[in-house]
Length: 297
Image (cartoon, rainbow, N blue to C red; front, side):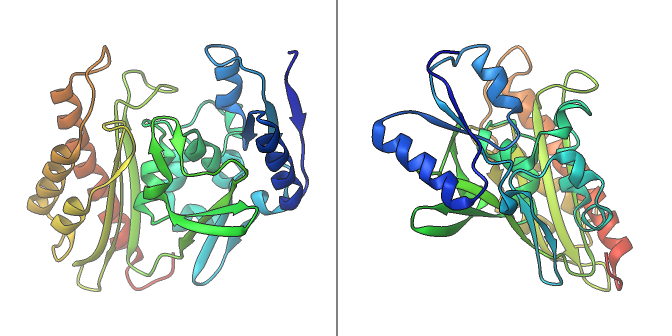
């Protein structure tokens, strides 16, 4: 392990100081929000020396705040902790279901949705779910904090918008209104613990008559980054989210996809599957929204 270093900052300022110092000296830094992907990478194809900066001991990255208007989830909160939070399950069942798909029970004791986002894999399961729920990235850096929509955060395969001395503090979401629901579905070749061939996240809101008044649709594993698909949302808004609307939304997702072909699926196959997943996730989100009409989640 010669050439490696480990830093365990306990404050935002300390973490930024470590990142700035490494950047100034030309040394590589790598952040640990969970570390589940980093350790795999280090044992396979990425063995370059670096400083591992563990942000799991900073109060802000471990914070979960659920307010009347806003929800904040720290970047290092383990998936296992999120899945035990009854309020979060009621507000964002689709988001928590996506987090529950990452690895085994043991892995979820460390894995976090913030880490999954920063790993920036095209097939990251939580990323389409975060985008569908309108997640806002809260980023800490030398000049203070800044915010950006999740759909703008991932810039390429394994790449994101973080600067050399920045790290993700957490994610903000608007507290869902009455009549809201979300869902995330993926397709994998095996029954569990596999990488998505395609994924789709949907969040929508219905009025008292069951008409869709707002929607966001995102797809993953079918492009270099997870995509927000406005055309799919437009196909749902103003409808009862019936079969015709679901078919139109699915077709929009298939059209937006730009997948690769590999041993896990052809381009045509992935385009078809992501459309099917959009239709099914939209129907689940609709049913959840119907159950929340006129009451709190």
